[in-house]
Image (tube, rainbow, N blue to C red):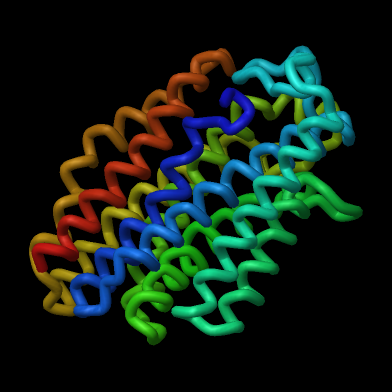
Length: 286
């Protein structure tokens, strides 16, 4: 259970909530497809977490000196071979569920699912691990934003829609914030082992600005949608989270000890879940 990293799982459910709510708004909601999307997304997140645990151990990216939550393989709780088998098992089940979604989205959806699995492994595995070259943030933004929200909407509504792309951006940005916090906390260790995350490459000031910009853009989008596009005022529901966003930004900016960010990581995951829930409610009421 610890290896599944429960604090990161809201990032898997958030895009399904938003995509399904938009499909409901457009009269295309299908609970079976929505449930399959949620299960697929959760398994992909868990599989990616297992892959990260395994490949970071193999590549020396995680050490016993890390500040954050324990990594199962490094801590000796799970043997590397066992973690590798668990990773492939989870991805296999996710693939089976993804194939069921072909009934709604066609074989093009299967191709997207295959790419998702490959990228989840390539995040820390393979000859050019994305996370080790500062590409993790882009990966998270794309796959937790447009791919997950747009894919969820498509399998239910049967069409692509620009609004799905627009509403996916806050989800992707806030999911990337979880990664920013993780990499901010691990900056010293990552630098030592040669893991060139965005924080290592551009510094903590840049990461702090990136973290705040994600909040600003996420709150600005519904305001712009209401003010300029005539969208329902119900879409402003996520704005009630502004005080919490300010608290998190201030905590990151003033933190001096990496251990101070451990609780903030969980708060960031909950923030994403609440934002997605409020945006979904707004779409249902619009």
